[in-house]
Length: 170
Image (cartoon, rainbow, N blue to C red):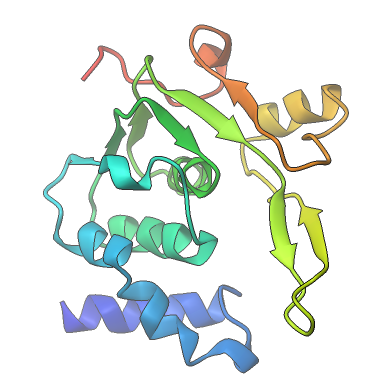
């Protein structure tokens, strides 16, 4: 386990998860409640409902690395998977980690909101670059994700051709 966490932390640092200014943040990211869940769940892991709405991007991407490192698969069988939850699915799918989303799950995508730290008053929205090129093309055809940070929802059967839906249902 210690070796896995050491590899994970090194991977996080080298992969750009954390800048040198932010290096002290990495162990916290890896051992967040979501990271601890990923490290201790039994494969196939089922995403707990408290994470269906997303959260801190770093926590979800770190959970993807933990699941990959430990050879675990993931089933998302929650009513929704939104925000950082979609990034977890995308990252696992890109890395070849077995992941599937229940056909009842609605996937919610939005631009990431970034609050300027200096004064805390400026909010800007940025796009997470999804690795699923068909998904990115879909957003491109729409003119991008909504600029106000609202969600673009995708569910079965529309997403069946490019999202990793579970067959048969879990």
